[in-house]
Amino acid sequence: MIILYLLICGYLCYNKRKEVKMTEVKSELEQLYNQSIRIIRENQVVQGKIVAIRAKEVLVDVGFKSEGLVPITEFSPADLEAGRELDFFVESIENDAGNIELSREKAIRIQGWDKIVKLSQGSDLVEGRPVKKVKGGFLVDCMGIEGFLPSSLSAFKGMAEKEIMYKPFRFKIVKVNNLRRSIIVSRREAVQKDREMIKDKLWQELKIGAIRPGVVKAITDFGAFVDLGGVDGLLHITDMSWSKISHPSEIVALGDKIEVAILNLDREAGKVSLGLKQRLSDPWQDIEGKFEVGAKVKGKVVNILPYGVFVELEKGIEGLIHVSEISWTKRVNNPQEMFAVGDITETQILSVDKEARRISLSLKQLEQNPWLEAESKYPVGSKVSGKVRGFTDYGAFVELDSSLEGMIHVSDMTWTKRIAHPQDVLKKGQKVEVTVLSLDAQNRRISLGLKQLMPNPWPEIAARYPLNKVVEAEVVSITDFGVFVKIEEGLEGLVYASEIDKQAVAGLKPQDKITVKVMKVDVEQAKIGLTARV
Figure 1 (cartoon, rainbow, N blue to C red):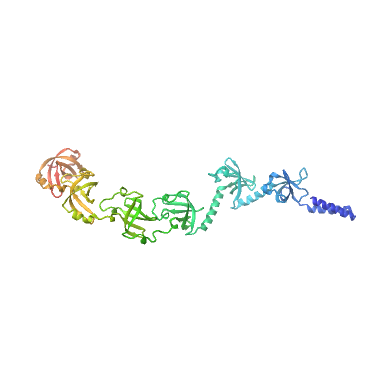
Figure 2 (figure 1 turned 60 degrees about the horizontal axis):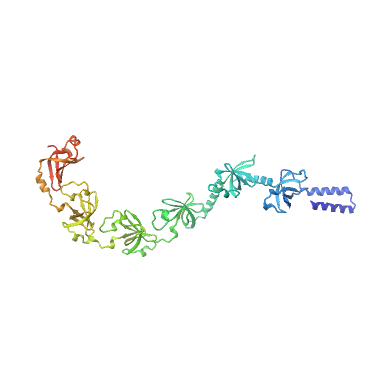
């Protein structure tokens, strides 16, 4: 404006020298001045240039007849620069001081509101900064527009307030109030959209066979879920290690940063299969060259199950010692009684199956097979001694002096007494003398007899208790098929159910005396049949 004033003065002097009429000069000057002034209206946004920066205000030229003054507090530090062109809102063409009234903040809000409305009509996100925490949420400054962020839509869970306030975040505009010029925003939807964008981009980058970094986010019995940076993949327990493991936690832990190979992709189902062991060479590739059948090898016990013991021969290669290959002589019901995880043991390789990834091992093959000499050492009919090692419902196991094991069936423990359980006759650890009844070296079985050490009393019993002899007997037990009675010490007989009244049976109890008659004496089966119908 000062430059224009000097031009006018010069022009006046110039025309005065030429003695031009004053009315013509005035007319030309007014026309020139009016052409230099922009047409500016109140309540509109115009562009202006900062011409001077003072302590509390900024002088702005918007091309009007006078400059405007704007409070310096309405400017950001980055905008305070002489010569910088910015947008301003015209509040008044002329105030009491004769200056045009401008506002930088209102211009920002008006322009911001127009952008907000456009963004709300589409799917774009808006950037904003939480500036105040209020009841139920936060006030957010979005391009100069005040928005409300409900706590339920903030997705700030687990974040400290210092990590939130005045920090830039992206938001989705969920509601616009044109009357109040206010908005409601959601960070939760913005985060979800960002995740979807990241996920879409990641799906395009994922390739089968590629190696990707990830973080273990969950562990189950069957594997671990790994976050690849927006897409979760499953690392199955069978793809964690070439060695057998019982639980994924043996290999990975929550929060572990690992590199995995992508084995398979199914974008429609949203599934990614991952592998850890595939990053290493398969130790079974040249297994035949490393482990030959018949060779002796040492390994570490890594797992013990009821059916056998797993031995690690080298990293990723394990063999199984089946319970039948542990000992020539001992029955192994529980391998844990003989082995512990971590034990180092020497074994012999029985077979190698590369396709099935199995190696069969044997412990007993390292020793001489005692069954090869069993028939000559324990001929049938010979008397031998041993120690009672254990019981079953049908007999007792006896360890002979060569560590071979034989069994005494309950029917071979006594000639006359009915035995409910072998422990009624023998005790564990008891030393006994027995007779060898039979020996099958191929199936590794020896049948032993205890009663055979004494003469068979049944021919004498048959003579002592002829048919139809009536005796008084003591009730021992009552069953569905009859009543067992004691005829004399060590000798029992059976009163058949068909040979005694049901009412009479109902009134009987052990140690009751009843009169019976001999119906049958079976010397071969060692049984006496009785009737109560005397």
